[in-house]
Length: 258
Image 1 (spheres, rainbow, N blue to C red):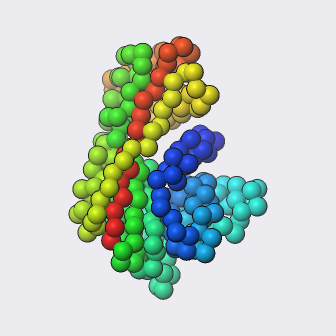
Image 2 (cartoon, one colour; image 1 turned 90 degrees about the vertical axis):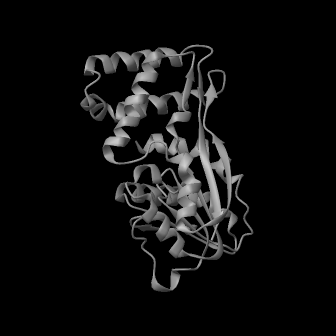
């Protein structure tokens, strides 16, 4: 799983970074920093600033610190263990951050509004928040593959069963507005490729890995047996070998000012 996430970081991070206006002296906060790769890329641009990454998972936090040490960048970001619902900030740090980033986290939270309230509390007036998250209805693969259509529908239903929103990307501005932010801007982050591109295999493998990782939950819904699930996966693997195989997806980007 960590290997998959590391590859995802490589595919997405620069595209996200290109959209961010940075002066260089900002105090930044990355909520749900995961393996910390994006946090470190940002920190390199904050020559006179500082970057803090908050991650709930001890495993990912340990891996983030290990990767930073491997790259001789262990002083770039201060990684802290903590929840987006209760940020691990010191008393004198609340209300001081210039930039806050939350990427691919809100879709996994039953109460994303609490995370945004915490982010708002951490920010100083005029600070900017940037969100990137999924609207899984945006996901398309071609040529048409019925196995994907069925499995992806069931995958989205797993979110519903967990009390999460598989389409939260389309609601980012509304969530920001409800939390008291202003001056909204939106965009998309391309996450896709065609078989002729070198990175296509990573996109295709990620799709298959996501579905395999939720196999038990998908089967529990009751519409597919384990045998049919594995048949579907084989059909997806066959799709990924086609010369015209294409994966179309755009993650939703929303930013706002406090």
